[in-house]
Image (cartoon, rainbow, N blue to C red; front, side, top):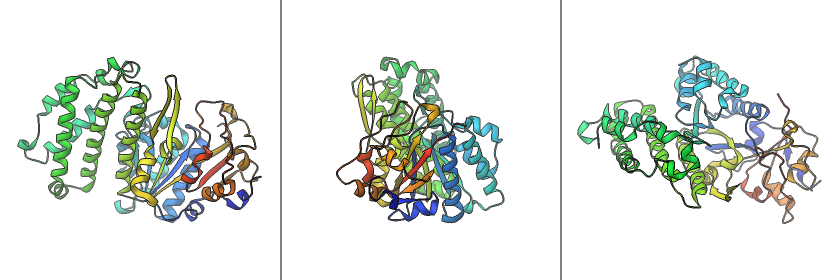
Length: 400
């Protein structure tokens, strides 16, 4: 066993994680190396409950559609909508079907019952309205921003009418059809209408910013926060659709970067109501450059975590999760030459590890990266140990 590993391992718990950090973070980012495993989500739920009950955390932000997430936040804070409806419509990527996510929402609603707003826990999605097959129309975000402003400022300040916006948007299918992801020529992102919408969206966001004192005096801070979310999402989607229409070889790198830029801007907004637990794939939260090998060659981009970490410094903490086995996915016990293999030799089923001490223990003789037999699982990159504030290890992920 690598010297020093035993000394760095502690039982998993919120207090143990926080003790390993240099300072109390505004954003505590817990990563996972694969999606959809309830055992990892159960661990996330347990940590969040401990952070709320003992450490004063009040927000959880997940890798899910930021606009859909508003439905979840309304439910957990005020009981709006049924749990079934919220799980169906409040999550993207199919996350609403996962039992652990349902348990999280149910617990948050129960915790908030009878508590004043200042003590309630909050939910946020921080991904854009994006799927791997394409992107949503900017309609919802853009019209919601317009309606917010139209109800509160002089009509003469608005850059256009709602009817004009609606006409430029056209049918949603021209934006959201999967053909646009496969073929840049099928994308509406560089059409004359999209160019005009980009200008108008920028004008509406500028108006929102310019009217901040009036808008904050005219209504609750939460309404203004939502309007800012609509503005970020509208401009981000229009930028993403423009990227989809790009036929150059750098198209996929650009799209990955734009998605994580949307994530980063949403996370910085979440940080305003810190402290918060963030949960997403390791690749979206790490401080190192993220990479993906596709048919056209390698794709690289700066992750949301790298962007947020550059802004927040020590107020952002990255704690990835590494795994031993996911046997129902063909991921068997790791070899001793990998970080996962060294941690697998520990007696604990789950532990939290001081990643920086682990890096020192290895020194220049870094272990090999583990090879995954399954595309959906990304092994830990040992070259990034210095960029991790701590590391959670789960020995075996059972099938549920």
